[in-house]
Figure 1 (cartoon, helix red, strand yellow):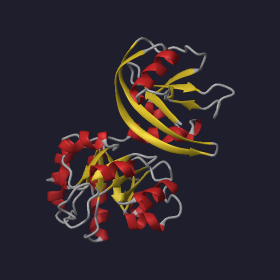
Figure 2 (cartoon, one colour):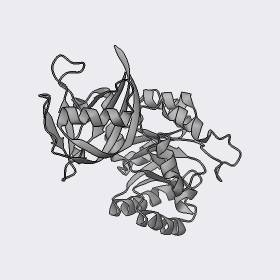
Figure 3 (cartoon, one colour):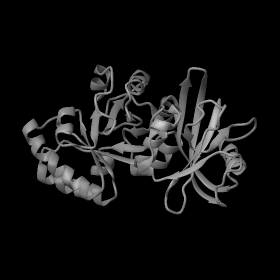
Figure 4 (tube, helix red, strand yellow):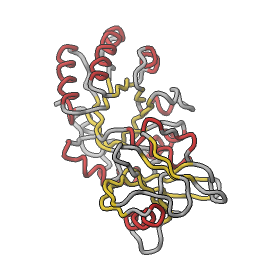
Length: 308
């Protein structure tokens, strides 16, 4: 079953949810408005029709946010979610359903259908994910970090694989302060204990670390990300409750010049299996952001993309 849904905002930036009516699958839960794709329709046409029928609005601009394949015990669905960028009219209940407006920070996946929950992550995550080079020269690194934050990056991964843990411990609170001042989230590569000690926003697992965990190693209040390179790693990330992943290498990267690349077609094929946000990684530039999103990505990630 192919289902389309729209993220609709009011002038205050609040998001509209509709309650599933009695007698329907997952009755009583709150979801993004939408409905089923009908024969001969594109997803965009289906969503425009559904939002007019359900809410009385006319959509004038939309952009795909995330496409989620989901297995329920009684059915398989694809949930194709769009950001409704502009619409005419005031949303109202045309079919008797209950409607509520919520600030993004108030939304909880607990009272949503399971397939709708990854949409929250996609709404909260930016389109750029800056992965740091090794901070072997802390002073130069911090200067570069300031430049990255000044250009608007709001999600940073700190790597410290080649420096001592003592130096990393000294560096983490300094980097955290700068990220906090810029309203950016900071994830630490691999070191769960250190991330929890300093109350960072989360951890990014290497693919090797990912495959060693049989359950989610962090509380849901912190972001858990992971590096994936193939279908097995991607499926395992979803199985243990990872919030988002990087998928690489899309193209030849200077950091891994001899790694086999998947290209955009290979990336899109894997991304279509992902029920979570995916960042494209590997040999990409900022100019590739739109291409990445067309192929199903949340956005782009990289080292030289942002730090060179």
